[in-house]
Length: 113
Length: 117
Image 1 (cartoon, rainbow over the protein chains, first blue to last red):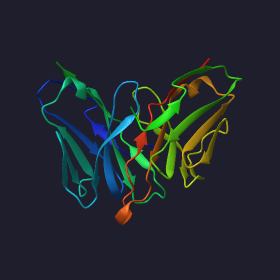
Image 2 (image 1 turned 90 degrees about the vertical axis):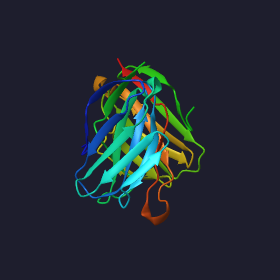
Image 3 (image 1 turned 45 degrees about the horizontal axis):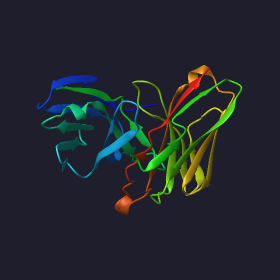
Image 4 (image 1 turned 45 degrees about the vertical axis):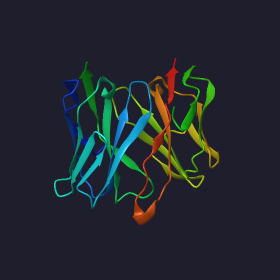
């Protein structure tokens, strides 16, 4: 079962605008990861934030993590048409053994040129 | 281009056929995964191999049979599938444990699009 919930389910913005996606989870985690999936392709890892980190940056991406609220957000700044994709958060849960990720339901981002 | 290679990219098979999906990685990763993904849904974990041993089977029906011949290869043998098994099948690999108990990110192939007639 999927424990993560993402909102919004779908987001449509204009090129150059910022896009923010949110993820909530229910368990204690080792880390939280964000992935992108272009249509018809596999998932691509974007960024990993550890449970003792609060914020992380990678290029135009900014991820925050609030373990007290069990939530994370992904901000994409100055969006481009090529950012159009589905975005998934995934948690590496402390309670599970092995390398199991629990994926959220995903946000479909459309960036209009 | 992805570092995890899956073949074939597309597969159409009848319910009585036997086929295999193949996955290969040369990153030295010791954990490999099979996922099933339906349209507009997140990937669902099926199997995990860690150091070539099956470590997780998410109660997958026996018509799906995984195999890990060596640390670089992962197969998924298919037999007597049902129409509801039509989906994108994704393979992934990860380094497993990194320092300080952090498990590394997963690297995905582009999947096999499977259609069951």
